[in-house]
Length: 228
Ligand SMILES: Nc1ncnc2c1ncn2[C@@H]1O[C@H](COP(=O)(O)OP(=O)(O)O)[C@@H](O)[C@H]1O
Ligand SMILES: [Mg+2]
Image (cartoon, rainbow, N blue to C red; front, side, top):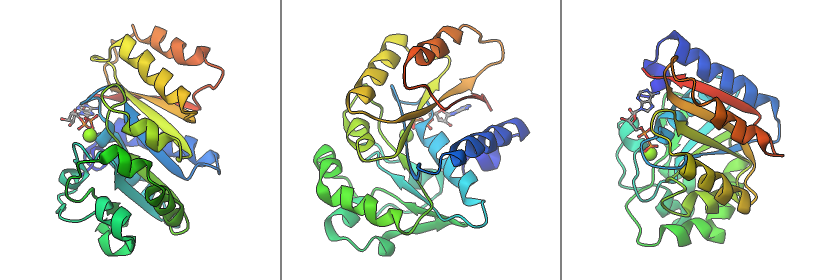
């Protein structure tokens, strides 16, 4: 179950506000969620955003686990992970591998691959994303942390918008800068930052916001997501 479903009123409202901000931009259909490091809340946020969007009556939403190194979407929604994205990239026929959670469609990773970066970089993967865009209104993608591996930067190249999740207590400013630099280098379209695990008394992160505001490509939204 996602944080959105378990969450208290303020958390649910935060996700709905993010949804409203994202919907405004009609050109954004595929959304990558990443972060600087592990445990900042990528999987939590991606699952919740996807679930929140899937509640829109007239919208079809797909959640894809592209963290091929540390898959976890299947755990969030208690699904098996025997088959998934890796099989789809190689064999095609994505509809056979889709699982469901209510109205939300989910594609888990499938069994591990020794070459995650090569698979994500392949034309097969890019073609698959183009194909699913015809079937879904929104596609949310979970990914590994940018400071550890290059996978999210690879995905960002063929995705409409990238959101960075930053854990407010744990984030290392140098890693955050590195993340921004790496994503900018591949021309990722940075559409927002989510300050996760935020405590009301943590005001020191105003500088961190400033860092993003300085950029010529401003974040279209910034959100604070409280600790549960
Ligand atoms: N806003 C939050 N408040 C409290 N705990 C959170 C919050 N967001 C994530 N977590 C917890 O932090 C841990 C890491 O989250 P996860 O989404 O798996 O991170 P990542 O995918 O970036 O590695 C999990 O135990 C998750 O339940
Ligand atoms: Mg994760």
